[in-house]
Structure formats: C-alpha cells, structure tokens
Length: 630
Ligand code: SPV
Ligand code: MN
Image 1: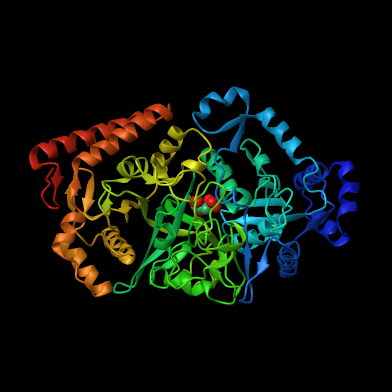
Image 2: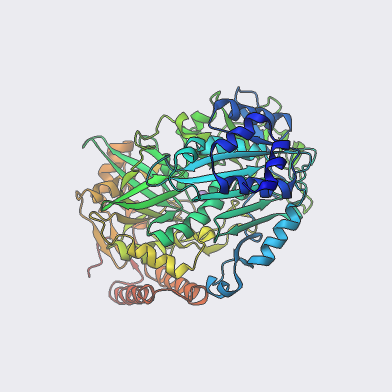
C-alpha cells in the first residue's frame, strides 16, 4: 500500500477491520481503498469479511440510518429510492474511453477518459463526509471456479451493501486464495447526501461512469440498484468487455432446468428477455428449477457449452407477482425471511403491497412518492401515482426458493441445452419458433429482438425499440464485434444449444394476450422435446414451429386443458408483412448504428426477406401453420 494511505486508513478503521484488509496482502486492493477513502473522506471505514456478524452489522445499520425500515414480518424491510431514481439512468451511464478510441465505440454513451475522471473526482470529493464507507468483497459465480470474478465494493450505502450480501456470494476467502491478486473488478458507490426519507438528495449530480480499461466503476448520487449495486449491471458491462478478449460470453440471461419427469431428465435453458418481458416468470415456472434469473456467463469447458449464474439472489420486478401467475415467488415473499422490498406501498399494517398483487390493497400508506400516499394522489406533473412503482422490486436469496436447482452453485456451471430469446411483440412473431441453426438463431432471433419499453428504465413507456440479445444496455464494446463473438462462440463446442424465439405478448383480434400466463410452460416443454430430438416441427420462412397435435397433448398433460385448433392457427400463423417490416426495421437500425456489423447479418436478413416475399406470393400474406413448404 502506498505509504500515505497507512495512516489514513488506520485512523478511520477499527483495528479488527484494518487487520482484515492487511491480511489479504493485496496491494492493488489497499490502494483502491486508500485512494477513494482519501477522496470521498468518510468519517469511518468498515471492512467486512465473509462473516454473518459483518453482514448483520450492515443490515442493522441500514435500519439505523433510515435507508431501510422494518416491515411487519420478521426479516422483511422496505427501502425507497428517490422519486426520480426509480430505474436505470441511461443518460448518465457512460463509458470512459481514451480519445483515440472514442470513434470506434459507435453510438455507445461515452465520455472522454480524462474528462470523465475529472468529473468523478469533482463529484466524489468529500461525498462520504459524515458517513461510513463499507468495504466488502464478493465473488461473481461460484467461488474458486473457472467462472469466478472477484469484486471489491466500496459504498456508503448500507442498503447497497445489504442488497449485495443477499444477491452475491461473499468473496473475502476467495480474495485470500485467488491466484492473480490483481485481477478483480472495483466499484465505488456513494448515495451522496440523503434526504429525510433516506433517499439520494442530489440526483442532478448522478453519475455512473465505467472505466472499462481498468475494470472500475464509479457510481455517485443514486440508490436504485440497477445504478448502484456494483455487482449487477455495472459489473456486467465490465464482464462483457473482459469476455470479449478471453473468448467467453456474458449474457443478460436466466438459467433454468426444464424438468421432464416422464423421461427423468433435466434440460437447461438460458433465456434473454428485455426488462419486463417475462424473463423471471419463465425462469420461475412452477415445476421447473432455477439456476439464475438475470446474468449468465458462458464458457467452453472441454468442448461443452457451460453456463453459470453470476448471482445467488434475485432482484425481481414485483408488479403482477400474485399467487396465481407467480406462485413460487409470491409464496416466498409471504415468508418471515430476510428480504428487501423497494418502492412498493407500505400499508397501515406495515405490510408491503404492490400493483397486480391479486388481493385487495390499502388506499393509503407510504410509497415511492413519500409518506401519506392516498389513492388518486398526483405528482408534480399531474400524473396519478399508482400505489407502487411499475419497477418496484424484491431482493431475495435464491436459497429461499423451493424450486432451486441442485446444480445452481456447481463450479462447472450447467450444460446449456438451449437458448431462448423473448421479446414483447403484439403483432409479428408466433409464440414459439426454433431457429434453423446457431448462426441463424443469433442473426434472426437474437439480433432482431425488439420490445416495447416498460417502467424498468427511465423515460416514456410503450415505444418499440431494438433490443439485440436483450443486452444492448450493457454491451461495452462495438456491437458488430459482439455479434461476431456470439456467432463464433460455438466453434469447438460438441453439442451446440438450439435457439428458440418466444413471444408471450402476441395479441388476439380483441387486443388481449393470446394465452394465459403459465402457457409459457407449454412452449418450454415443446422446446425441451425438440432439444432431445423427440418431436417433428413445421417449417416457416423463418424457422420451425410446433405441430398442433404436440401442443394439444402438452396442454392436456400439463394443465389438463384443451387447446383448440383455432387458437393454434391464429397463434402460429406466419405474418409476412409484419415480418418484412421487422427485418426492415432491424436492417435500418444496424445500418445506422452498427458500423462494424458483419456482412453475414445483412445477407441472412436479405435471404429471409426473399423467402418471405416468395411465400407471400404463393400463399398470401397470412400463412397458416403447416401450409408453408420450402
Ligand atoms: C433489468 O432491468 O434488466 C434488471 C433490473 O435486471 S436492473 O438492476 O435495473 O438492471
Ligand atoms: Mn436484468
């Protein structure tokens, strides 16, 4: 450690904490802590190891300083983010890039390196005065595994540290034992000054600056976890950059096990869906098992396509979680266990309530807009404030879940059998379609993924936007190169996963969704049988779809429900004009925004458009399932 930091840290840490830091014998870590303690100037520094004692101290402190409040059920707490801090702040999330590299970053949001660093130093100066800085070490993916990435977090937010303790594996021991002591991600976070509710007061100075060259993120004046929790989306951007140079992939995907009881087998699926498109609901389908719900690392281990969950917890959207549609999560949220609710209503009985909960909710309470909310309350812009924010969340450990997959923490990850790309699309894609092969899947299903915006990001809701791989917000190097890396990843893989597109949001003639919410289980089980070579499929101009008889049998077996031919015909009709428009939108988007897009992408789309046009000439604009032949 640099000489000057010794005295500084000794003065701000208790002896126990100071010794914990020194015991790691990690110069780079000490310098990171020293440099930012000097700059941010907290009153004290609390160094954690992997003990429950340290975790408990932080949890209690979150209550003491008011960043969290107790709810009626033991262990449950509520945290509020500021009214203007309810989602990821894309505008102020920037990559710090050297001048000479700025041009090749395309339209990624960047700031020139030195300018960015100067701004961080200005905003961070003295930002922790009057507070305690918590230093805690974590590990992404199972510790001491081929997937592990060590992470060091400095934060003055007890809520952030508490959330990270629920969501990630503790990493002090990992730091102690890891081979390359210099190879870890670094996160500096400050919630900044807090208002009387314990929310960030100074949102105007919100900054999330990502130094992808030095694997460090600076996040200032915010609390919403997508901005503040280093190990979640901030580290994801670092991991994507790191993976590009090391031949692996970091994807915005769940990992789950589809259970075929009849055959006694588990097939693992990974799925990418933009926010609020059914990702967690799919990962949590009753009767299946969960490995992870948000971020997956893919590695080629001995020729096998292995997937590992970065996290050990879930930071999930709570809106519409109810006993009928999401029974596994709903039941968990009713338990007396350590969990954090954010931005939901705290009712007069000190229980949490949210939109779409499926029970009667109170007409008053405290919520993201402040205490004293009553039904009909309006915000400064005159908009009615719902009882809970659309992006309000729960933070839980996966170990609470009855559907946790036994392999969730395996150091080798799980063998991926299939990848799903799922968008929010009311009028184009069928409910499930298999791609012709890996490359076709990446180009036709992953690159063309789109969604309508939701409350999970700041800004207007309901606009259709491109969502390549549902990963666009996190891609930290040129997108064309990322697409090529995705195509190339399976080279040398013995058993390449199948790729499926799923769309739960197709609407019927009345503007209602076509199926009930649990029908996703049917599409999943159809895919499971396809992966295992058991069912035939029908061709469309863009891939392969189920036969009615197979879905009918699955609906009967799984739900004891009928699946009428008429529903099937509507849901699996190929819509030529909508698809041509989709390809046109994708082409225009990539031509404009992805200067390094591989030519094969355009060629594949052109060929698909030709097939669709020829099919339209032959069969008409709406092609019912089974009609199309190559
Ligand atoms: C998402 O929006 O994709 C999330 C929540 O998983 S956030 O932490 O905001 O990224
Ligand atoms: Mn996510």
